[in-house]
Image (tube, one colour):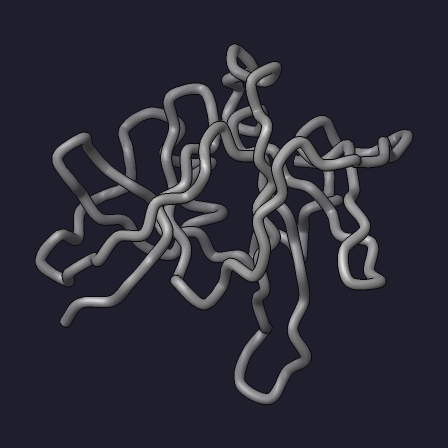
Length: 150
């Protein structure tokens, strides 16, 4: 079985993916607001659609701050706890515009060797392409605890 997805460059040489319908908006050089006393991986919010949306920096969370200055895109993503639940929204810093791809079940693979424990806490699966392993993000799990100190 195959499914459409977005391939995301989250910085620091890391990539991730989300389902096609999870991305609801893409911003270039957005205005964000700092949140004092927040965890180091989620120090900003963006205002979108009348909501205050947390911004999660996956590259930073994985300990790869080397590309922080070049992050110019912000993806807004929708997620739900399950069927019938109201959608929540979260944002991710990106180094480049997302790329539409198709993923097939035959591409399934283990999570990347580097930072496997961290990836396991925010990804629910992984696939491989010609450039290596790509974790598929569990946005609900990520943003339900985005402001928790880890």
